[in-house]
Image (cartoon, rainbow, N blue to C red; front, side, top):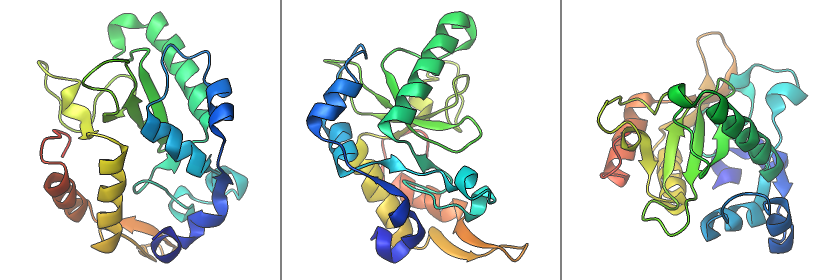
Length: 203
């Protein structure tokens, strides 16, 4: 499906990692990555950020997972994790970060998809939209964390992204400036997200 719907990203995907390499690189984390996340990095270890490599506008760069989000390598995820954890410790009253959230994508402006990796928790594997201070699009004082829940797990996320490509919520076209790149229909994306993730408040 990537080759058909988003061919530009395929050459940018890094080779996958062995389970042994993943275990070694993540040994210092206070949790073990969920099996789904390990399988993702075994498939491919993130993608190159062509926004920097080719010095092109971000709209022209290959995106992955969903519109506007770059798929982190495990090394980049670990760097983000360490910086977010440090920020949370230094700014506890203003940060919603916890040591069990592991970032897997970012949009270049601070918003990330993070996976809950807390061991022995009913929330393990859930995926949230987060920037360190705010949760997602829906803000509630009573349930700020759940308001950013996008997907129950990685499989649900991938199925949703696939549906967005298949139903043309994500597509390639020329924008108003005459530049060709990935575009997305916010309304269609939201409709698909709600349909496929009815218990996730983000949508």
